[in-house]
Length: 175
Image (cartoon, rainbow, N blue to C red; front, side, top):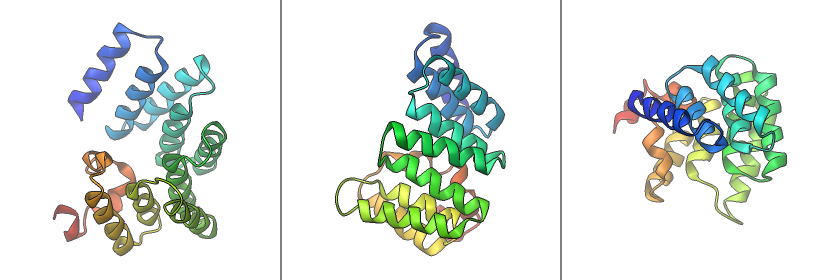
């Protein structure tokens, strides 16, 4: 992940005004566990482009990891206004609700995600994200298995994604 972070920093140096490249840098800060820097980078993007749903997702994730759950929830909700039904935003929202102890809201968001899998594409990884937040390891692993079967590109992030840290001590994690 350190190499990806260095590459993102270099990309921003080469093209400092591109919101996608700047959001990518925020994403790599998240996976490097540099949550304050991820938040700062996301805010920088949002200053230039308030309509960046990805910057909102990154900011929501950073806030959740910093324990600023209410702020994280608000960012995920704003990202859903920008891209309604986005699985990544819904997963982040459900996961953050779970971290905050708002289990009813987390399960309602999970129900929305699962229902959406029947009418369109929602990544199984996103569903697993909410189950991980709810500390339901069995369901999280079942949905990660589905993500594997659908050849989800998100699985390359599993080791670094802080939303799955609760699963790292489970023997199934390294299988």
